[in-house]
Length: 507
Figure 1 (tube, one colour):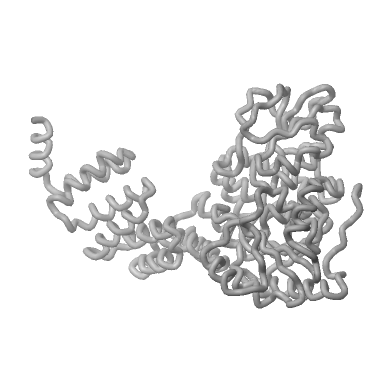
Figure 2: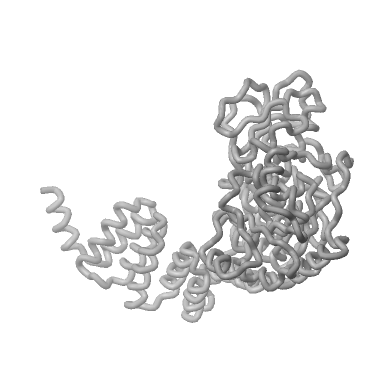
């Protein structure tokens, strides 16, 4: 009986009053009650634009962006409102439809050129399209139109960084932090930019903020205290644990030796895929796969926290030479599987995981690379799961032999790297693997690379055998691939274009 009474009262209530009540519930974040009220409105007025629009935003808040976009479009069919277009653009953005999202924001601005949210969301779409200076302009307009909050300044800082205005980016990150000192995303952006410029001494302490930023690191649920880098380690058992990707683990596991030199018994926890390679790492008394039982320990520290604790600068990066070793039987196995080497042999990796936050910037299609691969070289693809368009290209060519499906683990990948003359790869964990094995490798990098590759330089202080091939402008893979092409041509004659392996024991 109560539900019938409620229904009758809703039917009798003026629509404007019902809309106001629904909006109040929505603003109070009572999404279920707000949704029910919007649906009551739509039962009485099926094309009510505000109800359609706001019901769509509820679906967006719940992550159902397809339904959100459909409902908001239905609202727009009834009434063209800048807020409707802006929210449609937000839903399309979350669906990865950046071009359509941009068009929706621009439609909002055509109706109201001073509509700050549309300028802001236009900036987000432009960022995803690598139109960094346009994104800077969009965020500037958003700020001038009333969106002058910490998020807008942080986002403009990121856009300025992409556009190459590093001083402007730093200023925006700092302004965002003035507006909100607890805004960890701005502090993380400032830390990564500081590291990118090579200012490691100031970058590492700032980078500690990553522990509070969702999605940046694996958090070890330890009851034991975190090592601060100062307390004595003599006679202590310390757990060093992987916190980010496979490449990060490979890059920073070198610090196990430095920790052991302070008298600690080092327990190293790594991703299971790395266990065969990292077992026997200098300094690590025990190596354990994540998820397996651990020996007792007194202290713990995430791997990427170690550079700060050791005061690492560009001049003091630990360079232990070759610090990973491939099982000899695997090298022999793959030498047999690949057959007799009759010409230079080069391994290729042209894309990484689609789940990686930088995948759109770092990965290339095989079709882009093929025209730049000189003949006279045997090319071995290491792609374990080629993307659909790459599978089609692989099937229609004979220059690249992809063996990714035969690679059982990282140790197999290491063995193939050992018997190739060089590796050409985008910024993936295989690059770190080659560097830790002291194998020659060329790294294809976007204009705005990950912080560890810094800017402008062609070498890496982390890995002496890597050569960095950078885009000349954003999205211009052809420029990086031409550099690769020139270096590969030397493999059939003078191989000086690829840096020779340094001897172990450097620094």
